[in-house]
Image (cartoon, rainbow, N blue to C red; front, side, top):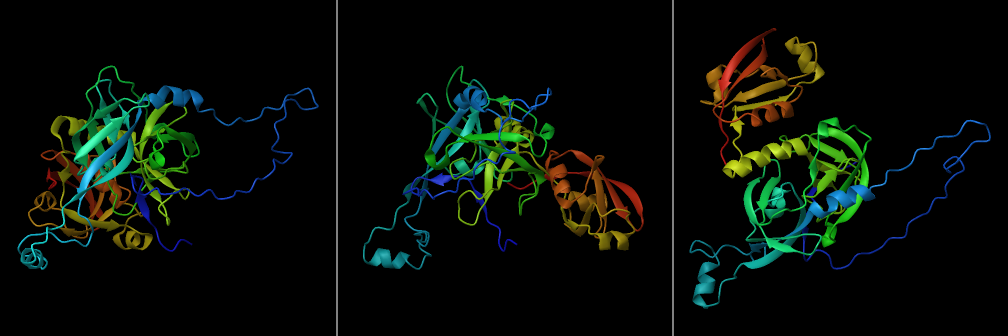
Length: 378
C-alpha cells in the first residue's frame, strides 16, 4: 500500500535541473507468442494488433504547442521576513544600516498550446500565476512576450495572449468520448526540453483528487514531468482532450500516474477569462460529506449516493432556500449528485445570480427547493 500521496504540479524551475542520471534498464526478449506473424500455416491470415503511430499527430499538433518561460519575484530565502517596521529584523537592518534583502527573480518553465490563430494560449494557472514576465517560444524559434488575460487557481487553468497572426492551432476534442484504455499522447517541455512527446493510455476518468473538487481529472500513465504543465493531452485523432496538470509522485518526478484537466472544463473557464478576466462561479453555502451504505440505510435511502449537508452558512443561498443540516442533496437542476464533488461542480458551473432547483432527501421523502446563488469570493 502507498503510505503517503504527493500530488505535484508538473512545472519546472530553471535551477532544478543540474544533472540527469540515466539508470540501467532491463531488456525483456519478445516471446514467441508476442512475435508478429504475417501469415499462419493455414489459409486464414492472422490479424495482429499494431501499436499506434503518433508521428502524424505530432506533425499536425506539434507546431501549436509552445514553451512558456516565466520570471517571478521571490525573496532571497523563504525564511527572509518582510522588512516593515513591525518585523523583528527591521531594527537590526536599520541600526547597522545594512540593506534589507531584496526580491530576486526566479525563473520557471512550462508548456501551453495555441487555441486561436490570433495568439490565445491555454496553460496551467500555476505556470503563469504571479509572473512578472511571460515569454512564449514556438517550435520555429520565434519568441513573444505574453500577456496573462486571466488565471483560475481553482481549476488550474490560465489564458494568455501573444501578438500574432495566422498562428498554428490545435484541434479541440471531447474528453467525454474517450474510453479508459484508449491511447493518448502528451506534448510539452519536460525539464525545458521543447516539444517532447510521450504516450500512454487513459487509466481512469473523473478522478477526484484531494482539495481538487472542481475538476474531474483524466488519469493517464503518460510520462509527464516538471515542465509538461499546461501542455496538451491528445487523442489518436490529434485532438486536445485535456491539459496536463499534475502527477502523483514521491520523488518529484514521473512515477506512472499523471492527471489532466478535461478540455471541456478548460474551455468553459477560458470563455470567462477571455470575457471578464476571472471566473463567475456560483456559491450555495453548505458543507457536505459523502453518503456511505450505513448512512444510506439510516436515512432510508435505497442507494449510497448524494451529498449529506453537515452545515449551512447563515444568510447563504442555501439557508434562504430552506436547506437544513441533515438534508441529502440528490440533484441540482436534474443533474444527479452521486458524491460531494458532483455538487461542487454543479454549483461551480452555475453563474452567480442564477437560480438552481435542488432535490433533497429529508425525513424519508424528497422535496424541491429553489436557491439563487451568490458569487464566490475571489
